[in-house]
Length: 548
Image (cartoon, rainbow, N blue to C red; front, top):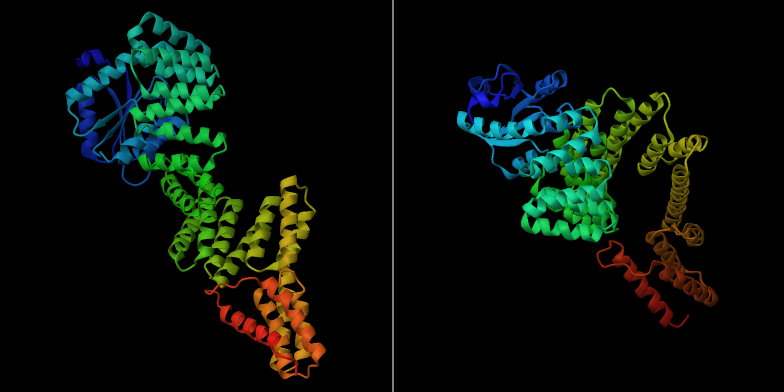
């Protein structure tokens, strides 16, 4: 197609590239093709500002733009803010051929994807094909930009009837319009017309979405599986299969599908967040932590940047660190750095900064950094007091962390304040759960104190008084194995070292039985195993020995 047929003279064009030579080359080629109004941007942030200020007809963006937003993030934000009109053209330009970059860029549906080096001829041909379709669909796009969806649908149907050869191009825009209007049967009809002429994975995907919306999820799954058989890397099919399986109650398989989608296209922030949320629900902490780590990294320069990704990263990491603080020390360090970034990135909001500091307190405590964790907890409480109107959820998050860090008295004081707030049913349930936890903690603490008194008396040879103390500690259902072993130990010692009558001996042995039953089995890797076995052997021998 000749440059005269392109008609670029009246087009407002933006070229985005961080390299001055590349910008100059692209600008020169566009000028040779007849363009007269060409703006340039040197990075993604400048490009977004210019797109927000100007209605561009054509945007050509390099994928790699140095520090800050990349070309994919420019495109996703332009789509998110609806600053790219329906009739606008966005072309991604790159020298990269890495599959994750290509897939990430294509997911946001640029009008074309051009790989460097670009020649004048190839650029002219590519622009010619795109602009020819744009001219045919101009009236439809104008109606879409004006928000006149029904009129745009009618114009699209007229175009298909009058120019059947343009069916696939027009239908790719018409199908989503019908779906937006919840006219799913009409959307299926349009996609079926396309598929009757030629297989297009996007049309089959559209059919599947409509079938699911109409309640026939099993047929939708069959269509998606067929599409993946033909196009194994059509990543949106995995997304929709995951959503459908989730709606059917199969969270585990839905997660597996999202993992596959992330393997194909790992640079989509929303997908990483969706995988992380699902893995959290499934308590797949490692998968969740990895997904949220990527969501944080990819979201730094994205319009989809969210504090939830930061906090969920900490929530996913916490059980791993608690299970093995040595193995997951590096993870804990990374989470702490991310939470520090959160406080800087969202420094204007006390509530968001509070959430980050509170998460740090939990992570530090789990890592065994008790002093640092307490300092973070104190800082979080200070921020909480600074909030103008702290809500119950903020307070309950603080009390929960206080309980985790062993600050039971502070938690109980704050919980009394929370009880005076207007609470939802869910918040009331959290209050009751935390109150029960505090009661159990107080009981355990008292049991431990009484047990310690018993140990001191035992060491002084005060066996009768020690037994009373151990029995008081053992009376609590929360008493641990060590307390129960102490209660057995003092009885064995009384029998050995007396004074102890025959009846007392028989009674003491009888009292040991339920204590052993409460202990149950002690594994050979338990540090208390040898003591347990020794006491059990002594008990068995005493049963067999005749009373003296």
